[in-house]
Image (tube, rainbow, N blue to C red):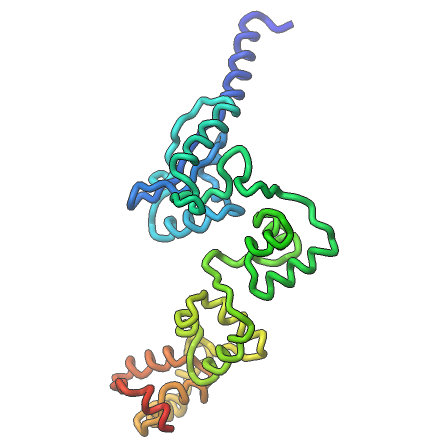
Length: 282
């Protein structure tokens, strides 16, 4: 038997544990607009939530110098779990998810997924199909629709099979465009300019080029030690002054046109405004 005062201490500890839950929101400190609503306990509100799409928004804000203390705001604490779940759902319905015209990156509307697709076990013979579809360019949401499950389920199986998920913003490019991208790269375009042209990420362009067996040019002259050879640098400058275009010189030395342009500028070489026209005449 506990002494009487021990009983009161134990009851207080149990009560505190049961009401340890809280509801919190993550806001963009620059605008004050919330982008995530969550329920948690202990230090949950400060964790990165790497399996959630709100992670990339949080990561972006932190990279821009925002502090977690300015992002994380507790709405209400000292709640029982059921109270926290109800309050979480209430605020998600107020601010609404992106899919519903709101600002929240939440996958779910609290107490369950709006789409009705729960995480489920997928047959082993279908996992290879999932991986193939993902490598062919479909995103997790599209594959989830094909297999009647949530995108987080697809991402979970990809990670279990050592497939690193692409970051949001990856843009699907049809297979028929691959050869065009390869041709443009070989003609002097770099991965940065191609990513802007096709409205996708640089890793997407890199993946497409590698699938065609194209070697990726170094994005830095220093990496290849070209600046250590005065004969090569003199020849680069001489070729450019003799009206050879930047794209063709870049291909000769397996480097990007942008890096070559930077090199010429640093060496006080005037860059021709009509270099694209000159290139076409060579």
